[in-house]
Length: 271
Image (cartoon, rainbow, N blue to C red; front, top):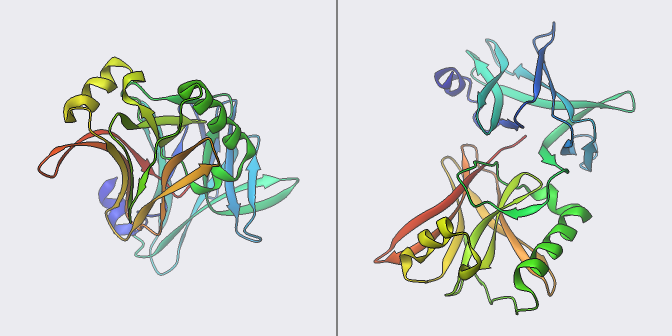
């Protein structure tokens, strides 16, 4: 499947589906995706650039070959969710994610699934989550979760002074840029190292208690670290950009001599 995907040149048009999503193949070769209860699709509408929620979690994926040949949608299933995209012999293929709202077909430029039955919490195991995306942070629910999270974690302690670089956000000594789940999507936030679980703490302390950073990398093009700030409360870091390959959000701890220990990474998806 990877070879077909490369030939199709559709690597940037990829999506992530929640675990236990139901897939139906239609007569026109498109596929319908029904996300599990609680999951909603959040995306930017092509016709008006507005952020819109699909509360039913029901969307469809189709593929259009812009030159010659054929490309068709596919899904690949894993233990932490599935991926979707287009594959085939087409040299220029476009993936389209759409939904039916109020009886009208709506096409999305970009977006993703979020789990509104979840909350904001530290990811303290090896669970692989897709990275958070820009449109999520336009939701009041997300800002409320960030506020509640930092109130629980900091208990009145002052928020640390962060360093923001060209493509990274770093926390000072005594704090670790920690992976968190925000409605089922991964972002990085500064947490006092002493409050981490034993597994995360032991890895973070590999640098002798030094600071850590969150950064973004792209295999083809660029994506950069972006921080969403809630004034006087805290912030969350994620990736944005025009990466045509795979954009990865990573949190790591420096151990000296330019060497870093990776704590967690999450992949960004277009849909």
